Length: 556
Image (cartoon, rainbow, N blue to C red; front, side, top):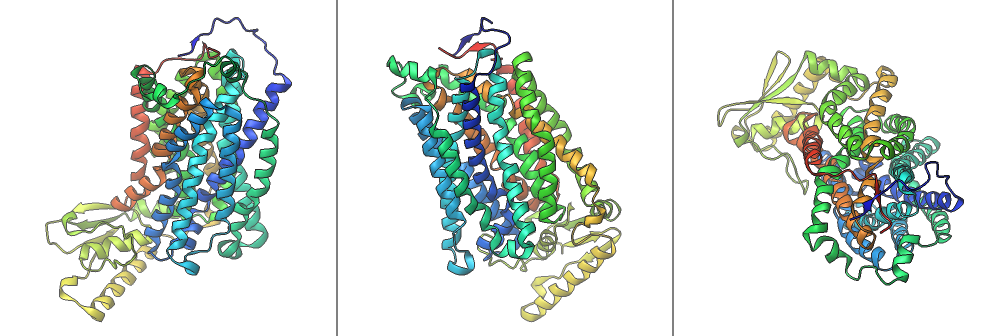
């Protein structure tokens, strides 16, 4: 582990030209990789229609999110492969390789034929490319963070590495700008048909610029000195995780810091975006603009909290952000509903919907092959209609075998009993029932989509900005914390794995998991229990076991 920093460095260290180049080159390259990675998330709804059109809409969107998550699933493996390479060969050349791999995968997504053209081969190829992206990103972040930290003076490491922390949000912001610009130039219909490919194809230009900039860099002086002396690790994976001395710090870092940081990040940026577009039915272009404005306001605070962590420590800032998230996520998303779709909020308050069913009589509302019509049980008929309509509902337990009922305000609608119907008669009864429910929902004020003129834009931006500020609190100091936990000889490998398990698995699976929880329960806010529970656990574990690291010397 790194030794204590004795304060011997000058208090007012000036940033040198070399350090500026290191920060700029590392940050720009990482911005490019995040741009590539998050394009998919921004376009999940369109990609669902392009590549998963063979299933129903709800299942297709969950599949699209699952493919989004696939890129996160392999990030820890990328961390091991490229982390080992980085600790044995060097930081610079490793993240040149990861950048090239990311650029190839992203550009190719823009060329893929869709489901209509080649059938099931289209989503398979898409998932393969997402896996390549995940592997590349698994090696990129640890290299960039380690490289910058090893160039930084001990008393400014939080500030220097905070520029790397801005890259994920800047990459998302850049992707948003390209998507918004393309949508504006060619129109929404053309964008949905073919224009969504443009942001992926443009990445080839960004790749060329980023590779050229990074080629100008020299190896990290700390690593070069160690390599010249022949003291670099020959087996960084086993040294980092094969003994309890180092392995326990990786576990503490994961559970006491990174897991909470990850779910705050993905809730505050991606889940908020999906929630606005998919649940609150705000149109995609407006959603992108709202998120972009919030990111523009909030991004400088990554630097602020990185700087502050050099003064008061990493641990209090990260754990405070997690605690605030656990306490405020539910009220924040309730407020977001009221501001972004007030008609929906009013309808939910004045005419709440409930479904009276016995769970034992219900199927799981998930159809991986798109063949289930959910018409064999009255419970399925009732719940599938609500799921497809995007209506939030509560569940009331009924006796076993009871016919399902839906209540909208004071009205009750009994579902058809499929056991007494067959063929065209059953189909006609279900259609009539759904038409009756649609009319009742419309009468109760449930909107088909959010009214753009009714959106309280300043309030929505304020809420989204608050969520981004929570992200900056937990994410700004995390790179410095992870770098400081581990010795130079295994740093790339040891910090990359907990980071990518946390952000790849705990965070990357959040949209898929949360929306599946919403689909299963009918409650549009139920998915928030996932990040809230992880944030709460991170606060407890972090307070008990996570050490403070900001005064450590990492040059050993």
